[in-house]
Length: 162
Image (cartoon, rainbow, N blue to C red):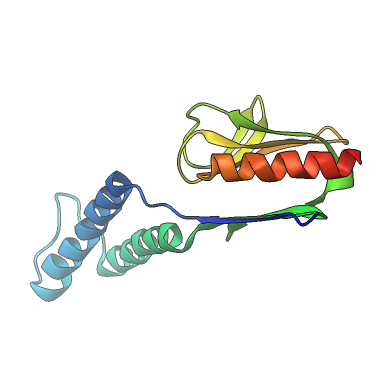
């Protein structure tokens, strides 16, 4: 029996991008005012060098959100999860104690430590694949493809019990 599941998620929330773009406008305006027009920006202005570093950091954060991806791949041998650029996991089915689709509630986006399901990796929503390993570790991989993932998990459970 062939098992194959692939999902790639990214941060697509319109409100998040409005916030990030809004934050990105501030250092651009500051650099224009201070470096181009020669007027100090703000009541307690940064040095020109400080303003440039601030701008680089802000655009680094925006770029990070642009390039972040949560990739999930499942086959008959293992579950692979990559939350680029932070985490990469590979778990063989024989290491898994239990696996189920859960509604973990809103815990925020990104990597959340300390939920009742262990570490949660997500970019959107509140549903995911909860995995408990035989060694006691737990984690959740968020998904937007709940029904498709549920079918794959049921197939995998059947295959593992055969």
